[in-house]
View 1: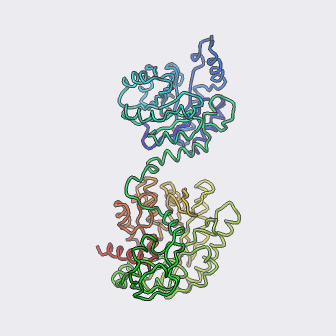
View 2: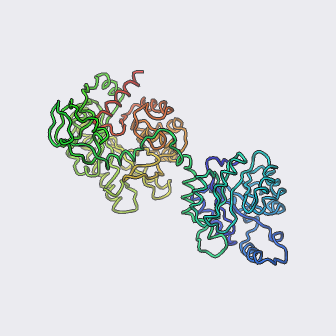
View 3: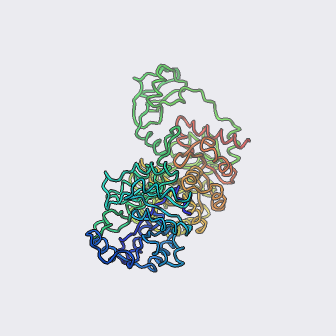
Length: 610
């Protein structure tokens, strides 16, 4: 039986194939690439469909359309098998019980059947289709409530599902009556679907919001094509949007607990928000007055809400002109304990650094391992970096961007983007070789290659070739495991590589070295619903570097370990026991005089002590 609870999108081909199997194949291909779960045909044996008279004007029009767009049972079956070869389900609508026999044993090749609106009262047809032990959808269009009651109350408890439908072609907004979905769901205590002939495909979104778990809608390559169904059909692009909304319904409708901002919001809060910056040096004991501060972008210190509560309080730590006021300036934090540092060094815990704060961070946290995070503007300033100690083991994080408007992407079809990306690669490689000579350590680099321009097989083949070409005794180029959504350019972008179970298989097939970001990994596990510990075990041989942080759901990134979802801890502990460096990637750990880094190291050391 079909699993409709997670959302099921059916692209009905109907008569939009124009009687041409080649066109039907094109529609199947479009459904496959548009995220549909299944396709559906209609079948009428022409010898049984109409009487010879056809006296009604409507009969004359419709019968002509049906005859012109006829495809036989054998051809429909071949098309159904083609759809199944693409991973789609295949279904068919019957109007006459005798038509089922035209398919012979091949009737079992279909995954589901549908009772059209006009045949809702055809109990013999419904019973015969249910007896085939395949799922049956029953459309309620053009029927009265009494007729629906008379039929549905005679049906078995399982194996069927009602579809709300308005049998107008196309259906205008005022006739959609989406509220009937909830009525059906409550009356018959089962999932409900929607068979749409709406002129506006967006009505299907309202149907999903009203609780429809199945959406059936005609698919077309051209809404302006001649024929009765094209105007009430959707293009592949519209199906792609519908698929995304239907499959993500539970996530879209989530948020019924306490609110926490996602990382994209936090980035925007920092970049677009303001905090208080000292107009002059403020020594210890100075009382906070609003007149001594400028309220400016970005928000890297106290917000307006928090600043008001500090007015009149004395700072316990001196504040230099131009620096933001933070909670650190009202505390007497002691130096991080030697035990915490010793435990973190023993287990190769690393912190992220920038060109400008390496000296300060390494002094405050005397670790052996650090990871240099670069921005695109720093690529031409790499000569500014010199290790304070030759014993420091340095890894390098490539910039996510190559400019204010382009992501790092060596495989881009845009020549200027690929060329600049390779310039970044060459600069970092050259710098890494010099750093390796100086520190006598092999330099591991981390890159986020997140843009898919061709099929996945081709993409991962390119990844393998690039990685192989860059590998040397002094330099290793790794690909970072990515989240399901990235926070690029202040917004959210869905990613299609390095984040799913399918991608894990490609990583294995191409023997790619990866940096496993545990926060990204846990978020992608929640989004794509794979077993995180199982996939981690498969990938263990490919992991050569770790970014370490907890996560909530599929968009809550960079939490302290133990502050994310409760089920995350076993995998995080497994990652912590690996023998290679583990970079603490808690969100904004460098702010407030590195309070986040300090808390993270203490938490991690405590877990190692257990």
